[in-house]
Image 1 (spheres, rainbow, N blue to C red):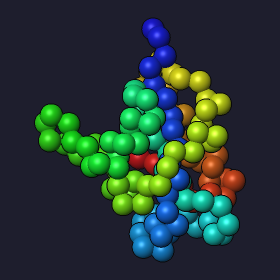
Image 2 (image 1 turned 90 degrees about the vertical axis):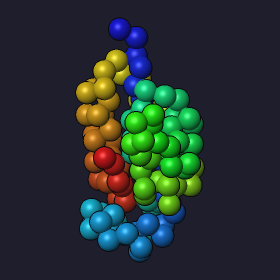
Image 3 (image 1 turned 180 degrees about the vertical axis):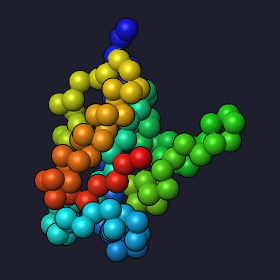
Image 4 (image 1 turned 135 degrees about the vertical axis):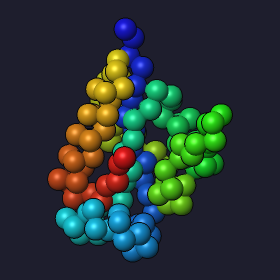
Length: 115
């Protein structure tokens, strides 16, 4: 099976830390030096997925597939934080990698959100 899933990282405005209590509570390690980030996974090109977040994309059934945090605070993609990760063949594998990358970035003292 060809690789179809990628993880990606979006830089968020630092306002998310002061304005969003859930984000702030999820990142007690954050010291304000590094950026606030969103980590996701997709079967699409990361640029296309970022645009979906930014426009409040809904699928044909009307379900919102956009993260409200990215919709409000998303600034731009950070490929230097994810380009080293090879695409994955399964959604399950990509979900595990999404969490692994998010936790690694938190260990580096970024403030990170993922679903």
